Length: 310
Length: 298
Image (cartoon, rainbow over all chains, first blue to last red; front, side):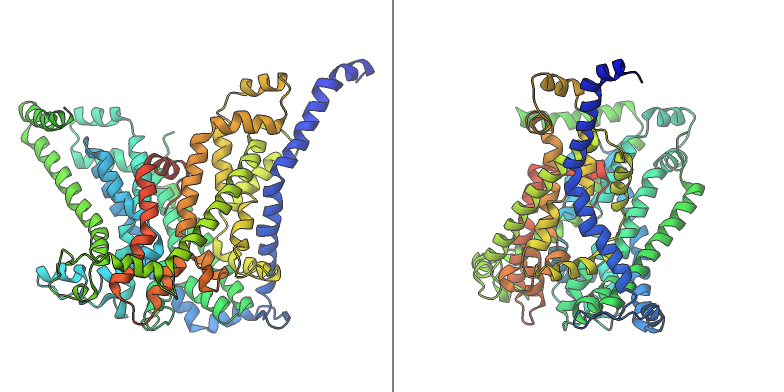
């Protein structure tokens, strides 16, 4: 490059792009500093303490894989993982199908759509703690309206949150109440399906059910996939509602009889009640691995059932 | 006038259906609206039950079959909740509001700056940083909880609001992402003419970008308000004294007390739910946009 061109480009081009870069680093510095301080360092530290026996009182000792070996022998780890899985297996498909059903209904309606959408989404804006406290009262076996409603049909309702066989299903029932978020995402997906498709199918003589199977489901499958991943990840980290309801009963986490001992609750108990920071960190990493594996499996299966337009 | 149109229009629509279409179509409308109304009732009923219970004297709450209308309506349940010497909800509301102001202002200011950088400025390494930003959206909370707790404990921040407020001043990945997308839709010419007039980057952000980005800032502000108001685990971990509790933690403790009076518990639940419900009614569009734009739930 000759001196002449450099002299020409120097002033407007060079200096402004350099200034831009400098400004970029300045304005993004809060996030970069935060990333290092509140994400990168904690993650690295979490890996380290998962190999120690640290209890916050004495200095951490390196114990190698002991925490992970202990987890294999700890029946409560397997149990809490099973409770979480069982909950997810029932709650996720139930929530998604109900959310889809609501979205389809709203998509069929022409008037007052906004009113109904608001009503179904309403529970979604409510604090999880308040929802938990409320549902404890709704499912109260003696004075709650739910069992009274069952009574109208001659059904003797269960004791819900005090019965180890039913407590988890009480939580599932409660989780169905707040499907508004998934419903809205489904609704947005349905609005994205071109009307022409349906009109063409109708001319070809396709019935309502056929149109649903041949047009709606395939074209909605990317939305279903997204909702499935998000709901599964969320349900594996269930904590608030189960914690609030189970600690209210006799103050024991996961009561009655550990029937609602979710993985995150057992992790919480180890970390913040027993201060077994090393063990709890190891548990957190196992949860991370479980979530990654489940997400990967869903993602892999998606090749078979998710349909992308092109 | 409006009454007239709402009563006449459906009738015309129905007769129109009747004339032009088969009976099946009318049946379809009846089934759709029948289901919508029935399901709406089921979804609203818990709120209804909560409010009724919150207004009952204690003896009426355990009556069976239920006494539907509270008699007398006991408003004092609410003043009992606010004035409870051990679990004072007025203090909890004040604490939560401190967090709201501290966290929302921090998040809006820092995210605007960062998002502007990602939307408009070129620099080596920018794309890598943006990739990292998106990747952080996928880190599960569980992994960060324990080391963050330890870190804040080292700082001596436990039982203060700092572990909740300070990180908010360092940006938040999804808000940055959302703002960046929005900033990119603002025409560059507006900024270029400002540069000609001698404005610097900060002036451009404050005078041009922020006023034009009120919609996205509102969405982020409103969703943040709801998330902070409803957050449970964060305040549960970092705040140990009842004078520091937020509304969610306060209600959880009230619920955990051995001899809880259900009517007071329901009054406290109303107090916890009401602000976000009112906010939702006024800012429905922001909620719906936020959900569909980001796919975030809750």
